[in-house]
Length: 269
Picture 1: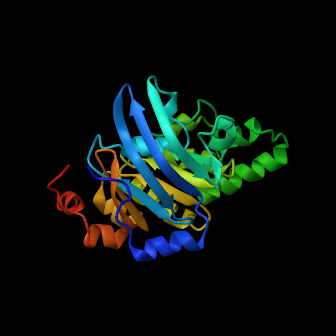
Picture 2: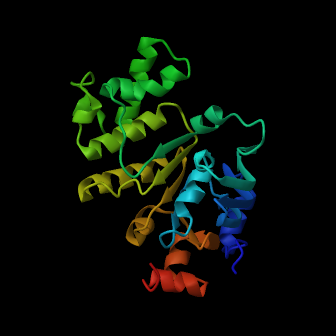
């Protein structure tokens, strides 16, 4: 059995030491209906970077991602021990306020889910929920975030149109803008380009790379080429444990663990 002390490069360890990470995971274990899904996860995710979680299907990648915004404990029969700290606040503390926690994180799912309302109201929805009522401020937020995701020029003449009229690639960018509108610190992505065409995929990838200047980004992807294109760091998860964590080029081009080597070469899927 492998422990999630995980193999980390000296550079990665030094980076974690020199800045306080947005996300720290300590002794995390997740059991669902009696089956251990994650084992002894200990991890600090570097700030202002893109970190991809890779590994075989069923290995715990998505579960690990969902622990970061407390989506996994909504399921039946879930037992979680350990801590997930965001800026030092334990998301799993008894007094943790889930709405406040999720405001810190934007989530891109596998398929875009625009709200059944206009393009404008999709982006304005989050700020409204959190108390913003000034129309002028809401209008500025909508324009700013649509510009941030490269959608403004495409939709500025039809902000009152239903969001469902957009292409699937545009919908995914709209969902990203909706997440950014509540000023999160972290962006989470769960196979967020798997339903997109190659052009839309490239657009989303480029957006994520540019957004890391202001956000800490954590992605789940099953596409190694994508992980190599967009990631600064890689977490390799196998059978619920972190086998290897480090800079992308180190993990993908010079993996230290035999299982990582087999996965990167395509012998494990």
